[in-house]
Amino acid sequence: MSVPQLIVVSPRGSGTPLLARITSALGYTPYGTMSGTRPDDGERPGPGEVSRLLRAAYGQDEAGRLLSRQRDHLEELEAAFQQAVTALWRVWWTRLGQPVTAASAVDPVLEDRLSRVPDTDLPRLLPGRGCWYVTGLDPERADAGFLHAWHATARPPIVYHHRDVRDRIVEQIHLLSRPTGQVGTLPEHLVYRDIVDALPTMDARITLALTDPGFPGMREARRCQWLLRHPAVCVLTHEELVGPAHGGSTEARNRALHRLLAATGHPDPPAALTSLPEPASDEVPVGTWRTHFSPAHERLLLQHHSGLLPLPLDDAAHPVGLPSPSPPPPHPATR
Image (cartoon, rainbow, N blue to C red; front, side, top):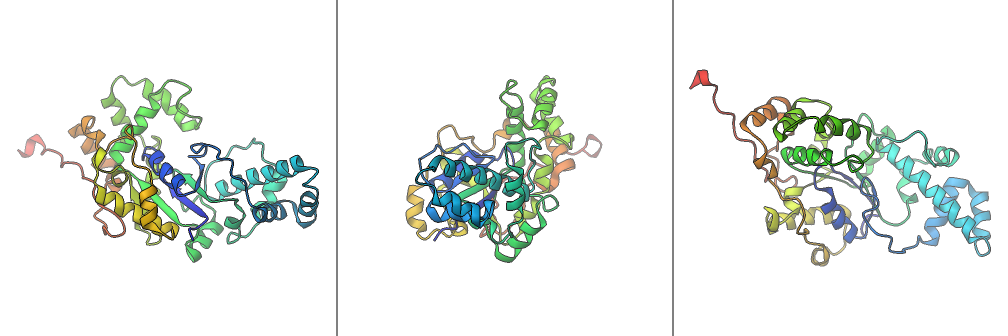
């Protein structure tokens, strides 16, 4: 049986929507950064899921009262359940080390009660099958209890989905170059949207991304490098998932999908492969950085971010398949 919950770490600009369509096809509702990408299919939580969460959120007596009156007071039950789900999502988000807004509609009493649920029991409270999408998982920011529980059980499975850092930079610049109101609400995006907009050329914007340590996505990418090396993490690349239509290969895509299906514990991988969506015609292709990066940019990349370049890891578990930048030309004095 497939695992009920999954965590995907996908740095910004990694082509996350493609993977989100795949996990949605596997029956996982996307939460976190990809919440809202799957339309409401009308699926209702099971009775056991409702009662389990209500007991944890409201206590045995109040949960019993809500459930006993559901026939005549269904709206009250649904409102209480939704409040509990919202509080539970925030607890999860906090334990994953993600930023939260102090002022929110979450009931602080419910949040406090659910935050005390043991880490080993917390995944069972989430209704349905969910896939948490986050842009980073920093061991120094994530909840220590959550990491201890994951270390002991490898549950929920963690998938690290990433992309050539040069393509990620180009994608981030395109995002930050959008008109005001289309760059999202993250404070760093709002700030850097103004900075990027003030630069006259793509050359200058890439130089900024390579030299400014606060440029969106660069710090969190460095803090995610442990995921590439951990044996319990399933590593996927955008370059694999795009397939042959966008510069990849069918063989690499199938290998990556098999790793994902193994991580989720899918009972019938061959059947699942035939039902997974192919990349859409407008999916971002690989290697777009080649039309934007100059030799000077490649030198800056090696100087400031050499640790983010593809590593020659074991292809059986962590794919290679990504080109390294061309070596910088010799200095004129050495020619």
